[in-house]
Length: 141
Image 1: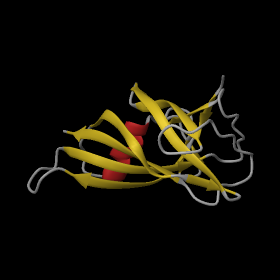
Image 2: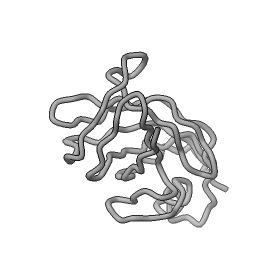
Image 3: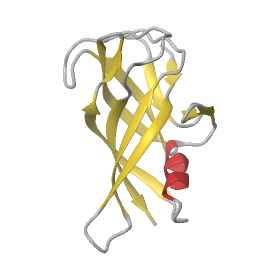
């Protein structure tokens, strides 16, 4: 089993209630750059050794999010949510599932044939046609 480093692409921040700027839910899109993954054995990690919009980085996902917020607040990841959009490669859906938070990054994401359940799905080293997107809950203080 190998962890494949994701390329974090877009991050859309959806802060809490009006007047609250202390966190919320972010929609994080990602793909794999020139990296094949084997379904059932490989997992995907976001942050800490991957890419930030195509540029290699050692930043955690929380740090990448913090830099994109540009408000000087420290971002802490609190939960990994469900798939919002599947990735797409040559017409094959790559549905992210699972994932756990550790040291400000997300690890253990599997690629599957469906948003829930389904079977494991492999990808090739070709570019993805569409990025996958997951929800990530966070605080910013």
